[in-house]
Image 1 (spheres, rainbow, N blue to C red):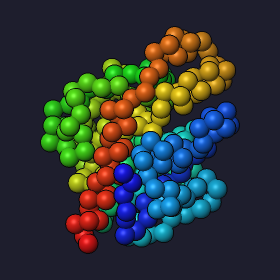
Image 2 (image 1 turned 30 degrees about the horizontal axis):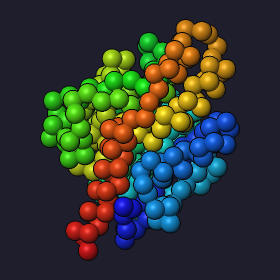
Image 3 (image 1 turned 45 degrees about the horizontal axis):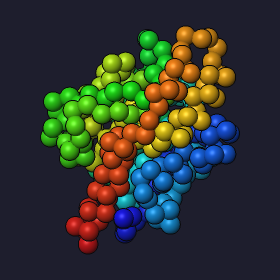
Image 4 (image 1 turned 180 degrees about the vertical axis):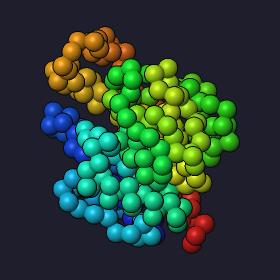
Length: 248
């Protein structure tokens, strides 16, 4: 059931999905709305690359920060503005969830180091392992120790900020989930990506690839829905409703 907020939920859109993906599955905000079971009437989408800027953090019930084909290390003006906004939001403990670029942007904004992963791209449906600290986390403590998630990323959090707790890893990336405070969390994986989205993405990536070091066709055979990683997004959305109910 979708939640009712006293304030809207903000989606900070940091990029555009490739045209073949948009044509079939919508853009990044629509993926979050669908997979997060959000009420689109209570969502405000701000397209940062188009020059739009959000209101101050106190205007929102929470924020979701999407993925992007841009790189945090490009230090683009809209991205630096968003990093400033994230720091302001942390001052009021605004609930925030970042994914992929959003994950890296949150870590960067709070003092972490971002860069290209030394082992290159992580892509496909891959295994995520929770770390001991996850057992105490309100959003993910109900998840099993191992679950699957869908991933596409070249850059990564090389060094988390001092304020962050690492909650999960994969064989490829040691910083799959970061917790920054009572209400702020981010994932390198994509909780908003369904199997259908990934099955459209991988052939497109294969066409764009400058080398053949990744077996995209082999990866395609192992793509699946990832309801447990999706549940983190659903739990985040549900937690906003609970916080607002308590505030009321």
